[in-house]
Image 1 (cartoon, rainbow, N blue to C red):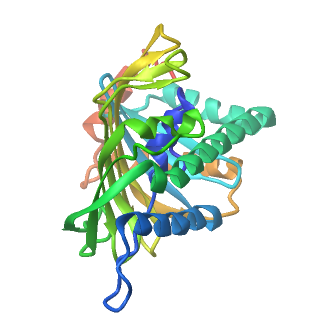
Image 2 (cartoon, rainbow, N blue to C red):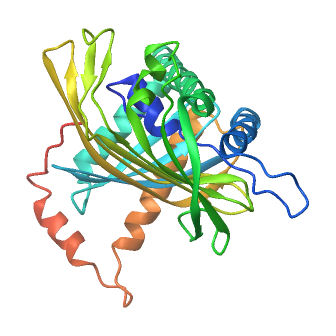
Image 3 (cartoon, rainbow, N blue to C red):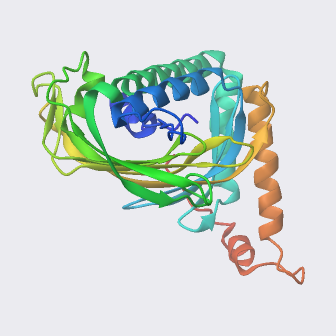
Length: 320
């Protein structure tokens, strides 16, 4: 699933790329070291990400210091389409809905804009692969026990292998993309049955600079959390992502990222779905959700819709 932080490409890759899996040794299989398990698992994950034609529609609930936003997202053959359906616990006003639909229509009606979006998503995916392939060499791993999987972390009831990791002092990152790995340590949970990553929790233990500090840096104490689960049919998707980073870009511009995303309500969609078809699917699903929310169990109009109707002469403004 292409989930990304638009402002800083290398941080996007970091937040969304930590998808590895570790194979649990069978009783009669030779015991693998943690790094061998990670290396073996990465090959599986790269193959899965490359060959997977599975697409989903799902809900992204994002919380920041100033916003609580719900968005419907659908994956298409062209790019990922997303439509905001609620802000701060309130459904969009008719005017806000029109603005959302107009924003998506711009991609449909202007192929060059959709091409730009697709190009950016590909660049982010390439960054992801670079980070993913660097993991066995960038860290030193050690076993740290086991936990049980849940509905949102791994697979319910499966054994999750916990591996601690810390920076490998011998690792020399080839590009700025991998540079951030030199200052991170934490742990990951691996579903031993499904051989997939269930969670990765990493913290910056030192300041990490880019371009000898000229291009920018991330402050010590930054943290990210990524959780993944089997959402049905052995299809694994991100279920939660938290980012907390501060730093500077070009020594002047402050960087402050504090966000939490929860991904839920996964539904498979056709793999050959076009972007335009995806937009129509989002609009249809959003309308169905509106109709459901508008009615109480006894069929009466909800208070939310009553208040929205009263506010129609002076609709709320949004800044998307």
